[in-house]
Length: 327
Ligand code: ASP
Image (cartoon, rainbow, N blue to C red; front, side, top):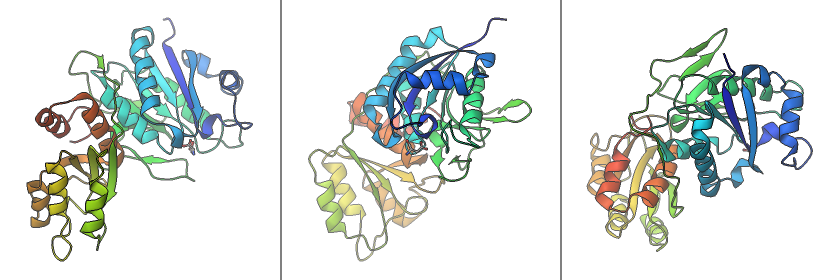
């Protein structure tokens, strides 16, 4: 059987950091020298998209990645994206929303220790990611420490242990042990493939804390450039209603055109109908984000604002599960 074809897109991060900074063309060479077994798994082509700490990555790189994957989709069986861990979950979410009807794997991976370091996790993560990219897993996932997590449900959870990511409330979509065990809940494409990689950066994230002064919030939300807000409320979506009520300020923002999406910081599910302190948020026009954590909520809101001009339709898009991010 001919070898499967995998396109490896390098964006930077700890995995490839030797010398400082690593020169683009060099990465492919280092990769071949340090992980020759990749060639046993698949025919791997490498492309350097950028070579950055992932804290410098954003909508422009998400767009470049999505476009590259869309343009070369039919030439490869799967894709691996090498990425720093700090913002990997944002990029994974952005790709999940930009690439609709995905019919092959897009596997993001990175490492806690560089490829050249002793006891590195880079080598295993890379070989696992390439192997997963040859499997029938049509999702955007994050591969770390033998697990493949749904990208739009994952969050970085550790900077020192090799298990750097978690996806609370959802089992890994694949586990790599003796065999590669692919879970039953892997998504299947529900529509024809399409790519819309536009993102609107005019959003902010606000974490509600006890005692937050509504006046401070009101001034923040008054920025004319602000088109969207990801609100991290308490629990399933509650906010203070007593001495310093938050909902009236949110209502004001919604009324002046800001889309407010409520997300969870702890991996639960937002339910704006459960408590009086969450109902007020719903009545103010805030949108419940389901199981979306901040990373997925940020990427989806940016995508919604850029790609769905009609406000009612945009709300429907945000309230609909499109990549396994909400349910
Ligand atoms: N600061 C690095 C990055 O996100 C950390 C890592 O690669 O794990 O690019």
